[in-house]
Every structure is written in C-alpha cells, then in structure tokens.
Image 1: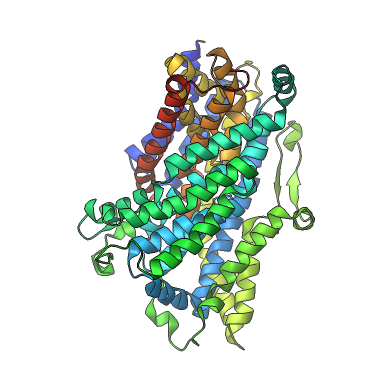
Image 2: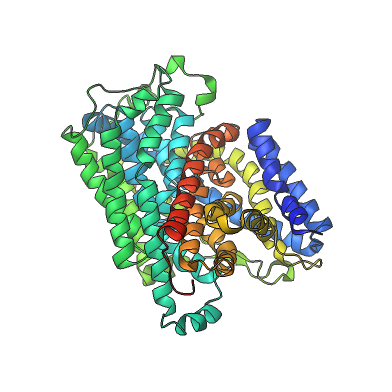
Length: 566
C-alpha cells in the first residue's frame, strides 16, 4: 500500500467527522458513534489491530471520558451553586460597573481570566469555566462557547504549568539519541528544550496578540444586532492593548524563565492591568455595545442554562470579594496543586485506574478525582455553600445545584463515550500486525510528502491535526515531535524551530478539538450545536496555523535562522 493511500485512509475518521458535523450538520450524539465505528473498522481491517487492543483502547477512552465529565460537572455545579447563593448577580453587577460593553466583558473573562486558568490547569478548564460564566452574565450560549474555545490557543502551549512542553515535547522526542547528537555540537538537552520554549513563546507572542480582536469581531459579526465587523473593529485599540498585556509578559517569561509560568504570569498581569484600564475608560470606544434583546435571539443560540432575575429574589446582597471568592479559591488551588510537589502527591494519591488494560502494554488510564480540576471546582462550590448561604438554604442550594448539574452531564456523557474512545483507538493504532505506522503518523507523512521543502508552512497544521484528534496539545506533541524533528533533519532545517511550529499548531488545534467543544457545550446546555461552533472556530484556527507557518517560512528561508543540528 502506498504512503498516499495509507495517509488518505488515516484521514478518513477526520474527514468523516468534518462531513457529518460541518457538512451535514449532524449533532455530535449522532455523528461520533458513526466515526467510532468507522475508526474501529479501519483499525481491524487495514491496520490489522487485534480485537483485544481495539477493546482495550475503547475501555481506556471510557476512563478518560470519566475525567472529562468530572471537570464539566465541577464547572456546572460551581456555577449552579453561585446562581442559587446570589453570587452570580453580584458578579454581574460588578462587570456592569467595570464596563457594560459586552466586548470588554468577553476580553476580560475569556482572554484575561481564561489564559490564567489555562496556565494553571489545562484540561479545557478555561472554556468550562468561562463559557457558563458568560452565559450567566447575559451572553448567548453559542457565543460563550465560541469565545471560550478561542481562548484555548495562545496560552495552551504553556498550560497546566508547561505540561505540553515539559511532558509532551520531552517525551515525544528520542532524548537519548538526540542528546548524543547535540553533544557533538556543544549543546545540552536542557538548552535545546529551552530554545524550543523560547521560539514557541515568540511565535505565540506574535500570532496571539490579535486573538482578543478576533474574539470581538466574531462576537459582533455573528451575534450582534447588526451582524457587523465594524462594531468589532471599533474596539481595536483596547483589544490590541489587552492582547499585548498578555503576550508581552508571556513571551518574556518563556524566554527567560522557561515553560512553567508564561501563561500564569501573562494571565495574572493582563487581568490586573486590563481590568483597571477598563475601569478608567482607557482606549475604550465612544459607544457601548450589547446584544439585541434576548427575545430576538434565534433558538440555536440558546442553551438550557438560564439565569433569570427571579433567581435573586430574597437573596442577601454580598460584596464583590465574597462573590468572587470561589473562583479565587479555584485559581489558588489549581496553582498550588500544580506547583507544590507535596500537594500534587497528596491529591494524586486517590487514583482509580488500570495499567496495561486487557494485557495491552502501554494502554493505561487513571481517574484522579481530587487532582483533576473537577475536584477543585467542587471544593470551591462547597466553600461557597458554607459562606454564601445561611441556615436551611445551604441544603436547598446543594441539592438543587446537584440536581440541575446532573441533568446537564447526561447528554455530554453519551457523546463523549464515543468521541474519546475513537481518539484513543486512533492514537493506539501504531501497534498492529500489518506493521504500519499509526494513523496520526500516516496522515503526517502524507502532508510531508506533498509539501517537500515547503514543509515549514504545514508544520503547525500537523500539530493542529493532532490536537483536533486528541483534544490535547500535550498528546499532539508526544505523537508528532519526533516526526517533526526527522522532517527538519531531512530538509537541513532547524529542528528546534520546526518542533516549535508543531507545539504552536497543537495549541491552535485545541480550538477545534471535538471533545473540547462537546465539553464546553455541555457546561451551557448546548449539546447538538457542535458543528455550528466548529464552523466558527475553524476561522481563527486557520488564521493561527497559516500565520505561524508563514513565520516559520520567513525565519528559515528569509532570515536563515538556524540552530543545533540544522
């Protein structure tokens, strides 16, 4: 079988997903079972995977699904809790005092707060928290999911305290062999990884600065009363300012401190500076912008999550600090649990999982309820119940929030139990009787053969492809970093820069990762509109990978930037 044929077959599950979700506009609950079945048939008939490995991959996927659902449940439960304590109303009033402009609110919640959350936790947490919070503030559910997904781009390469680089790239490369090659040129492995980190930070810093602007023009064009691009560009000075307030400290941190803290520091800095700038009217447009009345919204914009003024009747007023305390607590817990080795070990101690499922080496999965963001979100929700409710209302708040959140999670569970097993089957296909490269590697080889010396242009797209499949920058880097290295060596190009393109593209691919879209949609009760969301987030994804690829081409062929081994 030729490489082209094999590559096209490997792309079949991705193509089928696009056809059903984007072309035919099937809801994910119908599309993903079909895609899983097609992937399983490919695995058995073309790649000749054993039935045992196929079954093990499905079981692995179901355990991973439990982790994703746990995060979604935690986010929904916290929001429902704050709805019933009245904290959401206070937060809503607070944002109105900062600025009633919905464009400003989107930038602060999604970009500033969301980038910080990504830096602390990863796991799709920014969308899971930001999307329902924006709905609670009066955003259409579909708009909230779109904006929440768009933030899962620039900060993702350094999300979860640098996991995509520290774990993904490190484990995705043949460190022993490459270290020997580096030593011949006087380089150490640590210096090579830091060079990749620096280049990732610079590329993201350039491309990511425009993301807040893209968020607001998409918001005004797709969800505004006038469907206007112009209303989005009207806030360009403030949006560019917000972008720079994140990307400048972000890039400098990556260059000088390494991969752990760029998104954390950038997010915190931007949150402080941008909120204060908005309060003072700095670079603000002359007129405020808002959505049309809710009665005029199309039904497709609406989810089942609803925050009504009647929800607050009889609620005791509370301070902004008290209302925000659960979110502050989540942020602190996320940082401490990721930075402190002792706390991480303590929380990870309670773990349920299986190693080498059905005897298949390397096919393992674990569920750590306390370490995952879902557990920390639940802790914050319980704290909110204690400190924001009084007397008998505490029990009512708990039971009502639990009931409402449980209903929402059922639909997401049905979709994800097909989506994530498909992903694991795709990734695990490298072990097969036909002795073929895995499906992801086969698709990457197809792109490499088609583009030749123009490979740097497509390098970020390969990273995005991996993230689209796996829903993870880290997994994409683990799958493709060595392939990107070998491609760079064969073309006599800088491997560090090509791998940086892989990492940047993999971050961008999170905007279209199917199970991330499903998870974010579930938090606002919008299951069934996944295709609509994907069609909108495809545009910023194309922007991200195209500009990143152009930067790589300019750096390698225009500026002749080189590095060790290339």
